[in-house]
Image 1 (cartoon, rainbow, N blue to C red):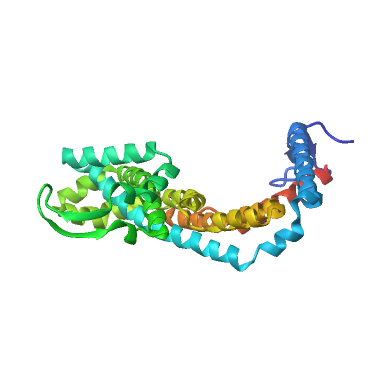
Image 2: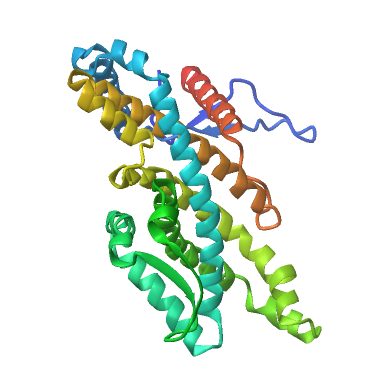
Length: 326
């Protein structure tokens, strides 16, 4: 006969402590039943199973054509361009973000105003508008000169020759990324405890040395994980460079789709799967970066996904065994 939840179960044999003949009954509290949780879990599993079944069996997806296109040279060339644009933009965007963040934290009102205006303006304009504007920049300025304002120019160059499709894409993505990276870096620097600044100042350390060796290394604990998360958005944002005539992963699929209109859906699935792979790899890197910078901030490091799976499986098996024993 099963006991109600929360009841106690007595062991069959008495326990004798210190030679006393008075039996002591060991008791165990049974866990509460949670039927609602099991019902919701069952419903979610049914919905997931139906989704996977439809994804696999629906002929509209044309998985045979998907396997044909997945590793085609045109798709791989577009993937390489996506990775190249992402890498350049990530590095330049981070460098620009650091400069803008230092400008916003500067004591100079001019630097603060210029940095704030840049961040406000770029974050307010859609990325596609920035890319299209840069793509048509040569219509506004045929040549770009560097020199004294309203005076002689030291040197000049033809903007249309320098601004290739890749350069336009990287510059546009970097300018947009720098505005967001500036807020990530600024938030990380402000997260450093004020006592660290006061202790460094009390030791008489120069400001540059304080920032390079004390403040910035501690700020990286929050900057790097957040910027890796920003990098995931950058990978997906590279799909917009198709509109400036750069055939990245998405652009290659779009071009092939216009040539093979019957394969539009499998080509879009190819792009989707590749983006899933790229963002998943970055997510794995993000997890281990966050885990590394958690050293010294937490008593114990968070478990890895494999370790978490093993713990969850062991807990589930132990729970099933307890339920069966009851």
